[in-house]
Image (cartoon, rainbow, N blue to C red; front, side):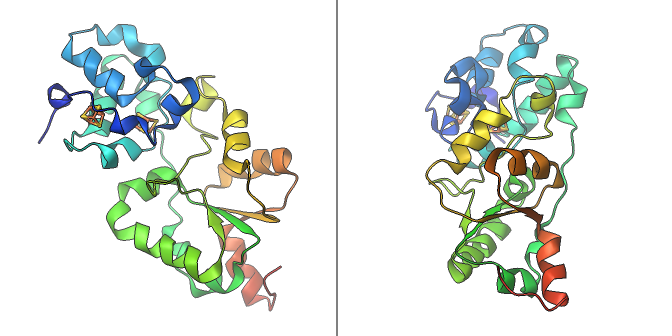
Length: 218
Ligand code: SF4
Ligand code: SF4
């Protein structure tokens, strides 16, 4: 398996890295982490950079060398004493998204926000499902040009440590989109998305409840 020493600085991992996209500073990127490790930088002194990572896993999929970047980051976080950052868990609502009621109750006016970390961890088996859901219903999704899920960052350790600006991320996420309702997979996203957008925000499980109660797509 490739290791950080195999990184040759192609920068592809930056393309879907929310941390880098917000800061535009290579020290806050998987490329920067790999470079620091290659050059023998004291990991304990990288706590600020490491704690800004959302642990979204997009970089693993984009690296042409197939370096285990998430594994590298987790190991570095542990070395820097940032165990809370590396072990934050996220809910996985994939099975809910597969319920036929979700497809029936989604429409072109909906903005569906996939939970990024769970999605990237099972990317090969999930990307086709979400592509089909998007094409069948006409809803928009938080997928970028590389079909990586753009995370909100809400509820992450980097958010709570003040290392990631979730308000700025949401503004960027909704920029240029037209929607009347937001569907979320991660309940942590609900209140902040509702506050910033002023739109109704439903958890994906509520789409199933709506249909079972005889409701239709709003
Ligand atoms: S896990 Fe996400 S935020 Fe962290 S370095 Fe990789 S792409 Fe960037
Ligand atoms: S994509 Fe991989 S090889 Fe390229 S800069 Fe990032 S970590 Fe290094």
